Image (cartoon, rainbow, N blue to C red):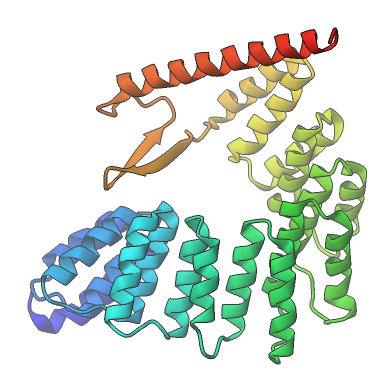
Length: 365
């Protein structure tokens, strides 16, 4: 493709990526004969934002082999890809590239580093990456507070919140969402209610549906389902599927059929193709032995053509990321994997039976 069309083609690639049409974007990208940094960035960003981290990393390698040096945009997208894959090894390798190219003090790159290390389980490295920032902005503070929240470290999140305030930054809605999340991961109901009230009373920040969803989720997990339901009715706007989903999750945890049914119906009204609502409601019925209702819900799913999204997971082993899809047996080592799982399950059963016997005999000790 002539160079004069590279700009227009790259713009089209960006458009396809934003719509999630990655195959169309890939075909256009391959047609470019003289790919520049901008075209590579467009494709890498598209892969990263559409959950195709492996392809993003492969393009980075291809770019480096062609002697092209990444810029901050490339590195932020690659770190996003590493975050989505929870791939710490590739994340650390990207960090080395960042250091070699002098982007270790770039705000957006450091923010992405904080997120990557947090999502890969390296909260200590997240804190180090943040400490390397000479002049963190509000996004930086929100990013590190969110990292601590993700790991359930409420006290650390609170410390950095206070440091942020001392640094002259006013919190925004994202800051409070992280604080509420930190409270949720730590089961701190009273603290979460404090921050929820403080948003409007002390900081004049309007609450959004996600703030309510966070608090409803915490109240639901704490078994305060009636209070969570009351809060939904007191919202100044209509609850979305995220808020009702938070209540439904609490109902499942505590086998509350009545509220669970109501929450599921609300979710289906808002999104009739939401398979999660049907599945959770079915599980609630099953937990209390209401098998007729389980069959009814499954029948509704079949009638409306709603299919459960297959579960999947991945792990990094031997310098390769292995994906596992629910019910898929195509992995080349599937027989060895199943054999090992059976061995571990049997070992767990033996240990469980032993613990039960010891517990019974201890009554006579």
